[in-house]
Picture 1: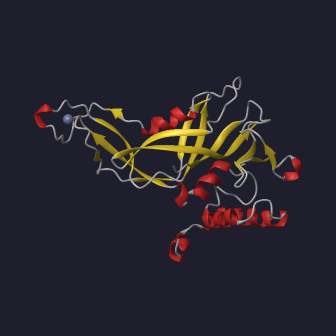
Picture 2: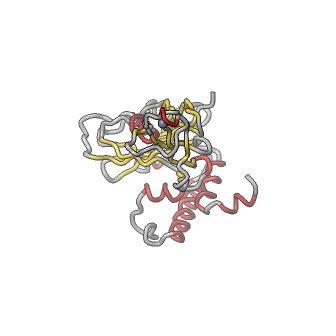
Picture 3: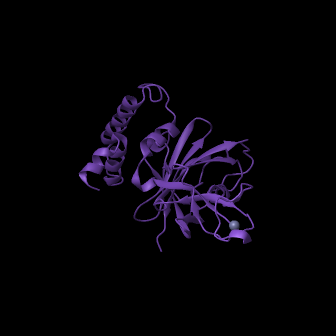
Length: 256
Ligand SMILES: [Zn+2]
């Protein structure tokens, strides 16, 4: 990344870069406090109403603002059509959408993987084809879906919203996502692995869990426990109650 692209990064994205560069477990309490204060002041500068100096801020709004336009998370999608000739035509009447995350509304026990596949699923439509290479033989079986027109994001970020919370069954995050996503004219078989999650607990508290970089162990951070220091857990859902729900989920692409 050259200096000009760095200058275009928002201060919050720049801060994130600096945090990622730091050695895990070696930041002091003072350093963490100053990072938090700097983030809060930049958020306040950006939107005083959404990010007030004091009081509660929505973790989701903070994440959306901070992560937006981060190259690792961003991908560009565009609507595309195929007719019975299976010839992919990009819908040029639309503006390509640049996205940093997938927003998904789930029934409490719906499978996350199905919801993600649904976004990229090819749908049948009743609209008449614009142009088909089969001419008179055209069966007018037009379908549309979304195509990624740059590259799949190295980190796939999912923000989960819930309909009808049902706390009887524990929500279980898939460790691996096998996805077939149209990229340009081809369907790419992609594998993403769970790398981090923010759980929303008891309606007012967040617990952060992420995969350690070197040993593959899962770290857990709960600001109310263990003096605010991370601990290790063996599974993503360990010691979380049934009312804990994944709120922001991060998957890392596995290159083969
Ligand atoms: Zn056709």
